[in-house]
Amino acid sequence: MATDFQVTVDCTEPHVLADWWAEALGWQVEPQDEAFIRRTVEAGHATEEQTTTHRGHLVWAGGAAITSPDPDRPRVLFQSVPEAKTIKNRVHLDLRVGDERREAEVARLTGMGATELWRASQGPFSWVTMADPEGNEFCVA
Image (cartoon, rainbow, N blue to C red):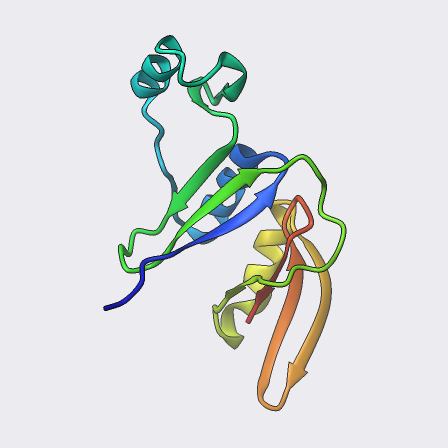
């Protein structure tokens, strides 16, 4: 039996980063149920401080998720943490677009606010290591 999992990214602005990654991957931001959030706060199970408004919608302040159109791909959750990123990621995403699309994808992501960090290759494989707007590394291969 396979284990279901999600990838979780610590960040300071989960909704902004979820929007960025949804656009970068062609995925969608998972909607949050405003009525459920209101009922939870009204019942005293959460506080107003645990909510925020993003793009005109009431959402949980602590996180936002994105999902792929392909249901077999894992969900990616962006969760708020108090500290900024200070060292290299121990886990990162590889965006596999192929040699023929790599330069166009690097240019597109840079135009969206990503930063190119370095280029590398090993044998026949080449990739570009980049950072998202909060500094989280990922590769375009």
